[in-house]
Length: 392
Image 1 (tube, helix red, strand yellow):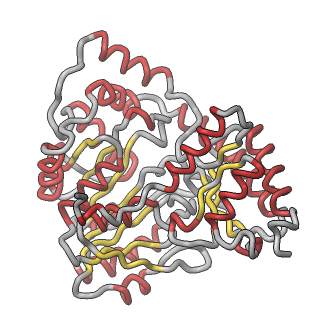
Image 2: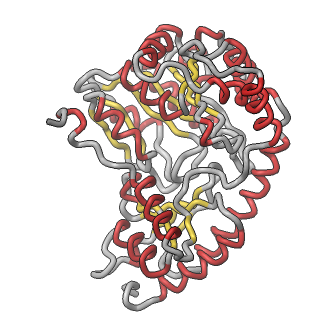
C-alpha cells in the first residue's frame, strides 16, 4: 500500500528523542534535555506585536504563494546589508521554514541517480530529502577540524554530480568556513559547473568569527548558488515557520510552482512578524549570542574535563558535538545505546551522532539555561564514570 519512494525514509532522530524527553517529563521525571534544536528564548516583543497587529488588522487570508512583496523586499535588503548580495523579489521564495525551502529546492533540482555531495556530519534531513527525490548521497568525511576541503570535493565529483549542500555555521558541529576556504570551494564548483545549496540558517549565531556566504565570493559562483536562511534560529521564531531562499530566478520560479501545489503560501501573520524581525533592531540577537557564548564556554569546559570525551569549541550555532566513542563498551556500543542509557538512567536527553553520519559522536544543545547545563553536566559526568557503562 505504501509508495516505494517513502518506504525507506527514516524518522527524524532529533524529533524522536525530543518526543521521548517530553513523555518522560509528562510522567513527572526530572529530565534535562540537550536535544532540542531551537532557542529557549521567547520571540522578541516587537516581533510578537507585529503578529498581533496583523491579526487585529485582519491580515489572515491567503497571500501570494512565494510570499508578500513587503517581506521579499525586506529579505533583499537583509542580503544586501549582511552579505553584500544583490537580489530582486523574483529571486526570493518564502516558505514554511528553511526546511521547506530545502525540500523544494532538492525536489526541483535532483533527478533520479543525480549525486549530491554532503559533508559528514550533516543535518539529519539532507539525506532523507535527497532519497525522496531519487538522488544518491555522496558523503564526504571531514578532516580533524570537521571540515571538507576543495581538493576533497574535486576528487568526489563524477559525471553524475549535481549539487553540493554546504552548511555553515554547521548543525551539528558548529563549524564555520572562512572566506579563503569558501573561495577554494567555489573555484572547484565553478570549474565543474556544480550547484551549491548553502544552508545559512545559523548565520547570526556566531562567536568571534565572521560569516561569509559562498554566494558572495564572485559572480560565477553566485549564479550557481541558492542561499537558504530564515528567522527561526536567529530571532527565536521556530514555531512561526518562516524560511526563505534566494538564487537564480529560474530555480526560484520552479520551487515556487512546487510550493503552489503542496502548501501554498506561508502563514500570513508570521510573514508580517518576519518583516519586523528583519527590519527591526538586532539588539535581541546580540543578547542571545552573549548568553549562548557563556553557556557554550561552560558546557565545553565541563565536557573537556570528563575523561573519555573529546570536543572542539564550536564557532557557531548552539551545539556541542562531542566524541564519546572512548566510553563505548559491551553495554554501550554506539551513539544510540549511549544516548538511550543516558536518558533512561540519568534523565539527560542528547542526540546520537549516527543521526548526523558519525556514530562516534553525540550532539548536545546549549540552547537551555545555564542551570540546566550545570545539572546535566553533573549527570553526564556520573554516567561517564559509572563502571557499568564506562569501558575505561
